[in-house]
Image (cartoon, rainbow, N blue to C red; front, side):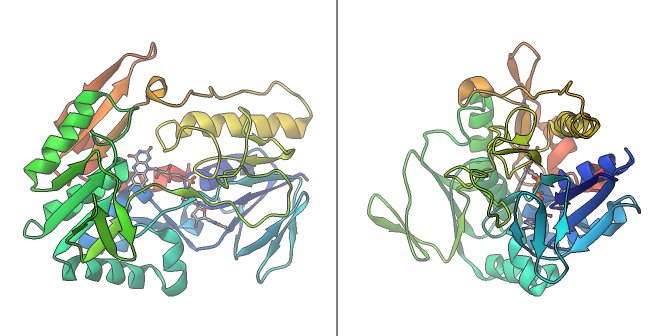
Length: 355
Ligand SMILES: Cc1cc2nc3c(=O)[nH]c(=O)nc-3n(C[C@H](O)[C@H](O)[C@H](O)COP(=O)(O)OP(=O)(O)OC[C@H]3O[C@@H](n4cnc5c(N)ncnc54)[C@H](O)[C@@H]3O)c2cc1C
């Protein structure tokens, strides 16, 4: 029987494993942790401290017939995955869905060491003890975290520094960029825009002047997190797995990759259903030996590659945009963003992320 191995039990790896298992192949999912995190919900963890609102046991959301191995991957080559404790696992096809590395306070790789409860306490303490919180990077993550800290700690100084003149980036329409700025100002966040922060240890400088800071949060963006591998040409200079529009690794068509670990220019979960259906379809074709593959559109970088998204600004605020099929963008009303995202950060949909 064909054996497909999936590495990474997040919303991409978990779903792909479940869907492939239904097609009658043997599926093994390798995860470094027994728990999967819903990343969008992590920004509120330092405040409610309830891990059940951000995480799920992977075994509970996997089809019973998917084999689950909890272990560290020590190497991946063209035919097998070497593990820290378990025997090597050989594969006919491999799917890599190991996501990205993010900084505190949403750094999932860190809770590996002492467990998620301990990590929660650590990041909650940092915020509670601080008086001057500085966030460097005003993309979606910086905006969302600044909104949370300002909402939950209205008495503290919160400063958000962003190198562009407007928050977010050019893929967001101006109305959305202006709205998040005005909502953050309404929560008393001080915005320093159009300036690059210089970070020296835990100190932050703008134009040579030190910014008061006793808790620095870097929100300059995630970095792809591929497993250790001896396969030549698997990753680019940003450590992203180089895939083609069929979700196959450019260097080896037996290896597939999906989600934040790849060089695909779009990130996130908005198009998850489409991407997962394409990769599972292609794997089925590949295994059958037929070749009516499906492909994903490869967007251009910059303003023209706009997509639908929403950012929270605390539990009661937020902004977002919707892109119509012919590319026209309009801003979403605040109440709709609050209802769809900011109030719960999707945690009620946690289990459905794995179907
Ligand atoms: C604060 C925040 C808000 C967000 N908001 C949105 C939003 O509103 N809309 C949206 O579409 N997207 C949003 N995103 C992005 C979205 O969460 C990610 O794009 C998505 O989680 C990526 O899924 P993934 O499966 O690729 O990676 P992950 O969710 O990171 O899962 C990867 C899994 O692989 C495991 N793993 C890693 N390395 C190894 C290894 N070597 N061996 C075995 N297992 C490994 C990890 O433990 C993890 O379980 C947000 C992200 C953040 C941080």
